[in-house]
Length: 384
Ligand SMILES: Cc1cc2nc3c(=O)[nH]c(=O)nc-3n(C[C@H](O)[C@H](O)[C@H](O)COP(=O)(O)O)c2cc1C
Image 1: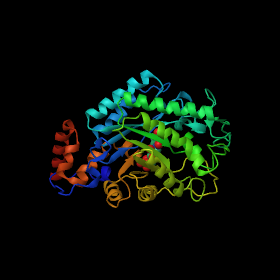
Image 2 (image 1 turned 45 degrees about the horizontal axis):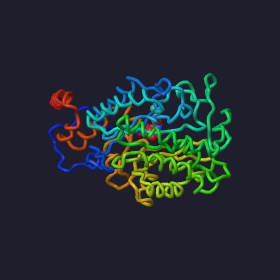
Image 3 (image 1 turned 45 degrees about the vertical axis):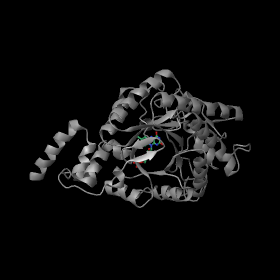
Image 4 (image 1 turned 90 degrees about the horizontal axis):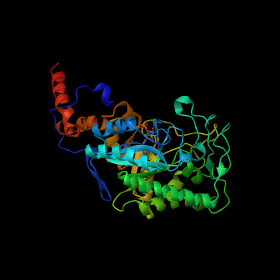
């Protein structure tokens, strides 16, 4: 691993070959300085959807640490769409102002700013992970879903959305996208993964509807596609929209990789620029298998979607090492790599990976304020 075991980052050796990880990449009018993405990570630290200084510092560290694109966590399009009471929101003006501070900081330090838009569906009204993650007992709110089946045993029954309510939600996503543009974000990522509302519409495990929003694959994709289309309509033409999916629900159950390829093809047609390939998140029969969580375990999903839907993809999930990330790109499995927990552990991951892979020229990614001291430190350590 890069961070702990390599205190003497290469200083003088120069790698004449620019690794793919550190070659810029362009989506519409947006040029990313490199292909390292900070994956969206809920911090459960907002108040009534309003974020504060914690988020600014937390996300700002990744820009200083060299990442190309930094995602703001799953941000709810309305209050009921939050996962927990600590989740961020984008349904009023002060929320826009607080987010604008983040985008300004990220831009000032060379990173692009992304925001993930979500509605939690039947996984909303839940406790923060460190409080157990179960359904809220006190302060609970009514959740919504395609059908009335709860997320899991012991969870409250959601309200099954009618067609008029679906239309209102599409408008909530559209308005939130406009607000995200006012806040200065470069990329929107629509959250269609992890069992939240749009994923719950996609999957036959959670969508039991018999109207035009349920049943066939085409019908189950309808609402997520309408949301993606509404966002694309209001989002600036020269800025990209990504979609995060759960590429599979499990092994041979529910939503499949073939369904993901079809969905990605449809998303491409309406102007979606990349698919972020995660997996799982819906409750499945405990006796059924979920994909084993080994390093890079979701990369094959990204590779398959990239190949068969011919659309740029983001690989995510247990990517920790600079060489591992570089290999994912050079082998043509993905266009971007996203990291979550490794970034929490080491917010300088990208800048450190640059020195690992490029030697002297990699130091360019470090802020000037740090670079001078770290280069001196590296020289001293090399002498000992
Ligand atoms: C603290 C934390 C919060 C997360 N919040 C989100 C989120 O808001 N939206 C999302 O799509 N995924 C979320 N995830 C999942 C990550 O984006 C990522 O897909 C997952 O952790 C696998 O990547 P990793 O192995 O690099 O951590 C979260 C993960 C963590 C650890």
